[in-house]
Length: 98
Image (cartoon, rainbow, N blue to C red; front, top):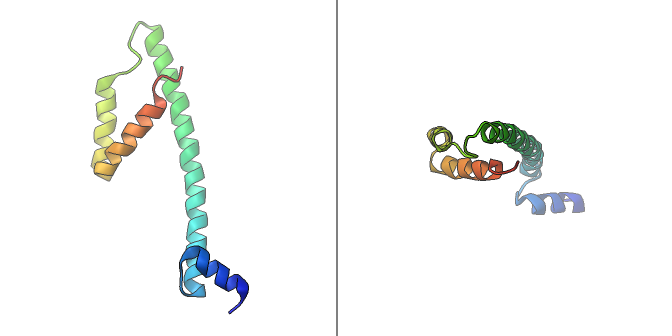
């Protein structure tokens, strides 16, 4: 077993080179997905800022609670209880950024 193989397995927690290779590849995919998710969250924040600016500019409130409930319900239906927490985090990130 090479030193590189030992390090690769240690970094992944795998016990075989084949498993370490799969884990390494999957982690790269996750890193790519995380980058895309972060980009989408940033885009969502920008779109939300436009909505809030227009709502406030027209005399409305910064937050539309009925719309937020729709979003919470949608995430909950799709992802269960953790989806609700995710939606809450997204809503928090997107509030008051104008």
